[in-house]
Image 1 (cartoon, protein in one colour):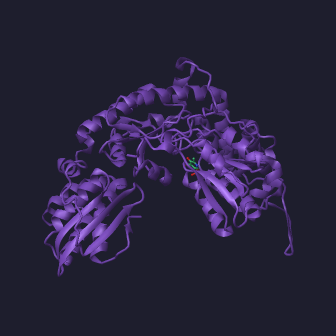
Image 2 (tube, chains in turn yellow, brown):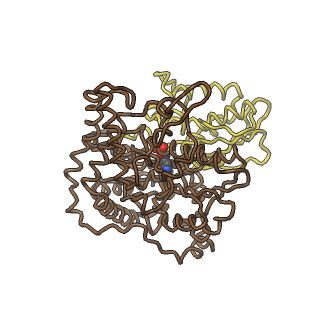
Image 3 (cartoon, protein in one colour):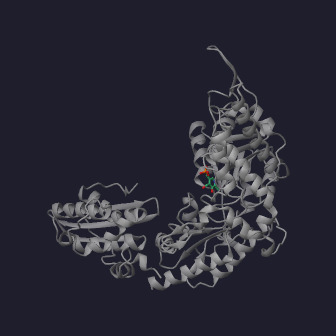
Length: 150
Length: 434
Ligand SMILES: Cc1ncc(COP(=O)(O)O)c(C=O)c1O
């Protein structure tokens, strides 16, 4: 029935939505930033534990749609062990992938995140996928205030 | 989920049982639904290869041929600026423009066409009252009373006025069915209250407020009442004299008319005493550099060239609706809402947000573990347009402790079959999400 949506709602997304990874609080987090998408009311709090410039641990709390939940869940998995610079580079690649500026998706660079490429065809949903990353960006830049995708 | 046993929620208001408007029960077969559907060309659109099921009417409704053709006719045959020229076209354009005002006056049964002010829409109408009436009459320490179910456009203009004047915004609470708690509302009307502004019908919940009782209570203390009629006007007959409201604001685009045009009704005596809202052409009688003499009503509040063709087309929309009859429309939509509510209640995991005993054709709902945005995208892939979001009523979302809801809102061209398509879609997406 929802054949048209297969590119957007892949099984991996349902899986991460049902069982979000790293859905917990890091008590002694070095960075803690709130992300908010006023358009749909999605809110999340991202926690980072840093070791020098390496992201040692990442976790989140909050509620959102399947796309935003899967996106933040996948992100916390993938950025663990990455340096700040590597994470920023990944954000850039992810952003290009989801906003469709770069037609060729570098599958190697984005890895598992490729399941979110489908949002390109749904402009109203791009922000759901990018909220997590904008929040991470703010956390890496050590901005304490809450960020919003608007 | 909020606790349904909260004492304030279900006890304090149980005594009020109000009947604002009781539609005559008519059977669906008498309603000319086939003809109406033919009048709306957009209903033939395919969305993602499926027939469009348009259920986002509370955001904006679609336009019948008479409205679309009217706009084109005005620009092809009757267009010039209004109130300005002696030439034939200007006279013709002015006649049609003023004719539309007359139609609106009759539609809401205003006492005079001087009481019908053209604006851009509900939002501008409310801002006009806040900035003109409000600034002239409301001082530091005074109170403005609204309800907890207001659209942002009936909150923010008052907050701005409060910031400018030092007045205080008071908010009457609602219960978990989404009804105004009338006793609490009455308690909030006090010596300092200078204005009451409430929705006639809520866009997020569908609740129809007991506006006659509200107006009567406010008038006992000589407090004027503004009704935000954006949602009520397409769904029921509105008689401003019978309601005795002091201001009534609505938008053309929710009334099957064009966007960019709306109305502020105000009682003549109040409007006469109010200072102008904006300055410019049309709102003046005589200008020198020393002083300006303002024009008479309604032009005093219509600075600048108005949305001429849109105003005329709003008149066409009103003719169209009047021919069907607002009573018949209210009865038909009540049946649609009853049917939709009944079907929705059969779906496991669906919670209706807004279950007022007096309700217009709006079904707001949430699903267990499925975010409204996902509902919106999934239904869209089936050709079904619903709204997913906070509906410009964030305080309502906070009250119900949901980030957003999905909302199906019905109009004269919707059918029970379309509601079946919606319900099937909801059931299927619940299955897919597992
Ligand atoms: C209850 C209510 N008030 C005010 C408005 C604002 O109307 P507009 O955007 O046409 O000015 C709306 C429309 O969404 C509404 O539903």
